[in-house]
Length: 483
Ligand code: NAI
Ligand code: MG
Image (tube, rainbow, N blue to C red):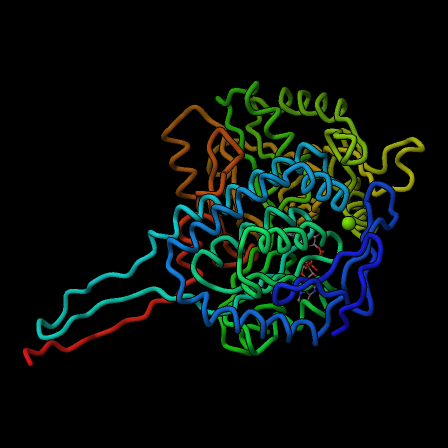
């Protein structure tokens, strides 16, 4: 490992409480210009080894801290993040391209994760089990030990916090591998954790490439649990690596989530939420509302209203705080473009369809808000995760048809249901094959368990369940005696 002197604009790895600059680095790109504005450490097997070893050393004392102590530290961390909110939001906006106000929401979510688990941590306990009367039979919950976390570039700070907060609260020591496209907020998060008083080695960050640091971490024999958020093919690799070491994996692999609008829904409420469910973060959201399924009685009206919103959406660099920023990379722009080209032959293009016109949009990875109508349920654009600002609209006739279309993809992450009929809402909640259903809203918060079915992955994040998921149960039985 090379602890080189910090070059200008260079972000290190954080290993065992130290800033570590590697011999090689990765250029960090601003998606609004396509140009590098910083560099980050490029960790490999050696740095991952050191990070896992540092986490293991830290665990020997961290595991003996009380829940109350960990809760206080998490709470202090939430305060330190709050103190750096403006800096973190600006950094996240620059690195990911997302509009500044959306980055501010991400910072607020980050704070909320640490606050929530700081409150929750003392509610983790085992049970006393009625069994034979000559012995005492009980369970405790223990941390796994060293947990690996591999996260994507769409909500770096939000997803890092979502996975780290319950893991740390439960008493694990963590090694985080951020995505090479947007690694900077993860590095700052680990620096702020040290400032908040976390002992060295409790939270380590090893920036690097997926095939290098990512593969090294997920296959490392020194980790006890691995969490991953990202694509289906890489999720499969992570599961294979975890199987090789016989450790548990939690996989959050995105989706093709529907917003289902019934004929009685209040379109004044529906329209802006359906639009933001796909335009937020340029559609690069695991739980994006990517498919609009709408009852044919309100179909024409809703599409016309959505077209107006899409047409008035402002587009620009994240730090100018437009409605819509660029997508993350040239590769992502190409992926979105290719699917949209397929869509032109499959459905009716109502708005958008490519790079916006104008000199301001030539260099960055900008893509217009794009609306396709009359999309057949089996069309490629209705089946594949586009991960761009592209909404498909499919009309339906009755609830059974709506549910069949909603459930008819490989994914099953979330669903939105819009109706004023409570019975129908409850019927839909039961019938939808996904991890989370939102009725007359498309926001969920940190308290509600979140996790997919089918190719959206397995395992649970958020809520009390995520905290328990970072522990395992130990059973104990103790014989009684009088002497
Ligand atoms: P990806 O799955 O390649 O990247 C996610 C993370 O995995 C990054 O940290 C990356 O460095 C790491 N990684 C890549 N290869 C790895 C390997 N062999 N071993 C261990 N870690 C590895 O996602 P990518 O290519 O950036 O995006 C492709 C598509 O994936 C998107 O178009 C979207 O459909 C989906 N995606 C879903 C996300 C979600 O929130 N569920 C987030 C990002 C992407
Ligand atoms: Mg970037």
